[in-house]
Amino acid sequence: MAKTNISKKPVKDEAKILQADLDELEWYIDDFSTFLPLAVCTLNPLGIIVNVNKAFEVLTGYSVLDIVREPLSVVFLEKEAVGKMEEKAKQKGISKTELTAISKNGRKIVTTVSIAARKDKKGVFIGYFVAMTDITELKNLQMNLEGQVARKTKELQEKLADLEKFAKLVVGRELKMIELKNKIKEMEKADKI
Amino acid sequence: MIMFDISYLQEEADRLMKIPGVQKGAVLKSHLAAIKERGGTESLAKIEKALSDLGYPLKLQEIKSMREYPEGQTALVSLLCQKLLGYTDEDIFNQAFAASKLSFFGQLVMRTFLSFEQVIKNVSRYWRKHVSVGELECYEFNKKEKFAILRLKKYVFHPVVCLSLAGYFLGMFRYVQPNVKIKETRCAHKGAPFHEFKVTWQ
Ligand SMILES: [Zn+2]
Image 1 (tube, each protein chain N blue to C red):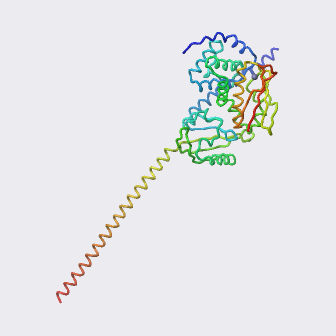
Image 2: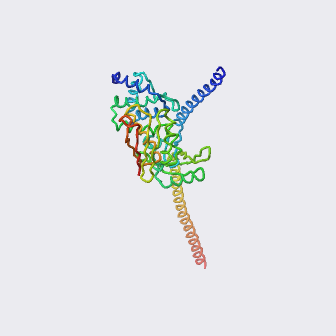
Image 3: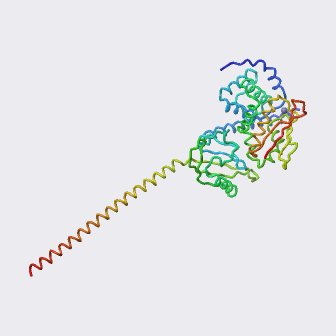
């Protein structure tokens, strides 16, 4: 009897430790998911959203209740591209591209989207991880910079054109002066004769 | 906060909590989270206080998804939603439907299934992972006529649970089948030997 008691105790202790670990893990996942500034979601193998984190809710304006059980394409303007990305991720492991997300209130958000295929321990495909980064500001900055460069180039071109006109004018005057000088010389010669 | 006299529920609460059987905290947690989503922290506080007053305290923040809790507590929560928050039958169904979207454990399981057929044929396994009492089985799966019959045996708590279960089941099925519907066609609280749910889709 004593033997049984001794052998049972460590099992019980181990179960307690495991349970505590599971509690810890849940706490950790919850915390991490809330803290993570990157918008992420999980899709089942059919491309249906099963889970989103806080940053995803903030970025898209969709709550868990709004968006869970919807296909990922709901979030994007380019519906067909999403399906193609999922297919590519399934075949190659990962796919990345730039897509326009449409928030719940209709705002367009330029995003970089990465989709990674998930496999279980046996290598069976079990769905996808999706990460989205808002690059609207970066895009705006890029467009601003491009705009500035274009403006400066135009200004420069205009100045060059002015310079060319001026140069032509100057050269024209010089030619005229040479012509005049030559004429004077000719007249002087004629006078002497 | 408005005070409610809930002493009339004490006997029913004690009865429900004495019925043997445990469930994973994930389901209970998702139900309370759905109550909060629907009616805000005030509704949640009302339910949490009532549970405490009845001697069965439970707080959303403290529930651990993988730990075990009495199965009767889900029935008690649904009953309190009816009595204190004025939930109609439809509200109970919808609250459970929403809860299935918020379930940590549900998401964990549902993210791996590939098809509706696979889900419905695995309901027994899925049920056993969540609840220690009752047996859920897929009695019939008719792919051609697009319906399935689910039977839940040895599970008698409170009629309100039937609505809640139907909502939760439907929520789970919607992860893999968009146009699916559910209806309880026989009920253990109405003389049938089990609860029977007819699931249809297009
Ligand atoms: Zn029933």
